Image: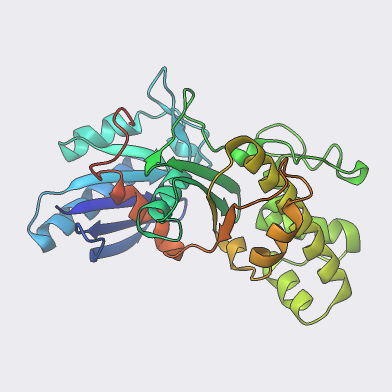
Length: 306
């Protein structure tokens, strides 16, 4: 069986085709039409048609996208690709492709990919975190993505940073309308803002990490604050979900010291005498989201998931 996965991002749309063993048989990226909903649908149709023509197959199609489908209206909500919000994207894709389509949040796809044949393939409960320009997560239990009654399971980034210090309250404003969301601290821009607020020097996350590695004291302090905040934020998840494995994805997951220092610190906040949860790098890197979209058609996929 050939499974096509589509990763619908703000700047690019990627298509991949996997065979039953997880081998890539087709891969293509195109630019996302800016603010053009009909154009986005057309690009997806073209990618699927090209893949099927080159492989001479009729394949299943799974789609990962920012946001989630409303359980009441079937319209997309909470997407940072604004032109998708309020649109019946699943209905429209099914119509345009003349077949059933499975669609879920891109963080769910990331978590599913790593739980299927990635860094957490040996785990029963997986929390897959994306920390980049934004912050989100997906939950997979026994290779089944957890969607939730409101289709927001894993929306970790829009909870408040736990155990905040006085200096962290009320926290930076978030685009969701609240203050102090985890995303405002742990995203790449969040790290940059924190460094500027404390030092008056505008640097991006990559520059901060590079300078900290070279011994810069101010950047080291910024990175240490980041590590402590991630430890607190993930400890909160461990206290609620108690996952076997947490996998980090997104640009911030490339910070090497996170994998040793965050687990060293989260024990102070976890309500247990020991913490056996593992923190791991993604095996599939930037390909995890699109691979997870393809795996939405695995035979063990949760029935009833859109």
